[in-house]
Image 1 (spheres, rainbow, N blue to C red):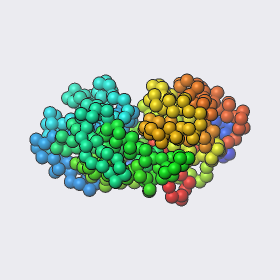
Image 2: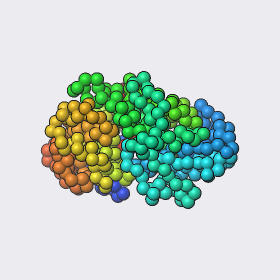
Image 3: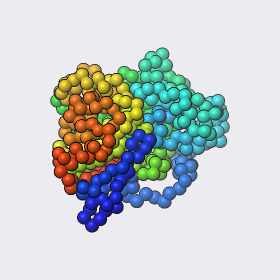
Image 4: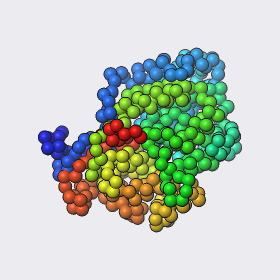
Length: 443
C-alpha cells in the first residue's frame, strides 16, 4: 500500500511464468498499479458459467442460437490456441455445446477447429486442456494448417488486394461459430471477434498480405500511425479483416472478457460485428486505464504463463507499457519465455540485421507476422530504455540495446545506479490485457 508520500510501503508480487516474483520498489515513487477494473468499477459479479449463459440467452444483433440452428445441421466451433488459454475455454465451451445439443445438434455434428493462424499447432494434450474435462472425452480438436493448400478454399479478394483463402473444413459446415477473448491488440486494435477468421483460419499468404498493411506507405515510416492498440480509425489491416470475415459470414459469435482475477468477468454473444462492438465497450470500461501523467518508469509483467510463453507473445505487453511512460524513459519488462523466442523468424530479424531501418526494409521485402513481433520490439527499443527480466539468452535482446537480467533485483539495481531513485513509476501486472492513456485524450 501507499503512504502519504506516495512511496510503496510493501513489496509487490507480479506474475512471471507459472510463478510470482517480488518487487522491492521502496526507493521509487509508485504512482499507481494499473490493472483491470481501474478504469471503472466492475459490475456485480455472477459466477463464470452464469455470465456465459446470460450472454447466450441475450445475444446482440441476432436471435438466440437455438433459433438460428435447425436440428440435424452441422456446426463448426472455432477456438483459439494454447497461447489464449487465459480465455478459460473449459468454462464457456461446455455452455456453448449444451446450447447446441438442446437445439438438436448432436455431438457428431459438432466440429472443433483450432484457429492457430500461423502459430504452431497445438498438441493433443493442449487440445484436451482447452476443451476441459467435460468435453475432452467427447471431442477432439482439429488444427488449422495455414500451409495446407488442399484444405483451403478461395473466397475472393478484398478491396485491399488480399486474396482470401479459408479453411475448407470450416466452410463445409452449415454454421460457423466464432469463440475467443476480447483484448487490446497492437495490430488490429482489439483482439477477438473477426480475428478468429483472419488470421485464425486463413492461408499463410492471406495472413501475410493482410498483416503487411500494418506498415506505413514509405520506407522509413515504420509501423503505420493508425495501427495501434485500442483504435481502428484509419486502420487498413482491421478493415481488411472485416472484409474477409464478411466473405466467411459466421452464424454466431461468443467472446469473453477476462477480469483482473483471471476469471471470465463479462461475455458477449450474437452477431460477430455487433456483439464485438458491445464487447469492446465492456473491455474499455474496465481495461482502458486513465492516467493523469506519463511516468519515468513502467514495470510491466506480460501476465505470466501462457501470456509470456515466448518472446513473440510477450511483445504485446510493451505496446501497453509505452502508453504510460515518457518517450526515452524506462520500461522494465518481466517475461519468462519458457519456450524461447517463439518463432525462428523473430530471432532471424533481430540477429541478422544491425539497425532498425535494415529490419524495416526486410519487413517490406518479405513481411511475416512473426517478423512483425520482432520489428515492434525493435521499434520500442529505439524509442525507450528497455530492461528485461527473462530466461532468454541475453545476446538476442542486447543487440537491440535491451539490458537483460535473470533476477528482478539485479535489474532494479542497474536502473537505480544509472537513473537514480525516486522515479515516478507505474506498475502493470498484466500488460497484455490493459491499455493506459492520458485522461481525456482520444486514442
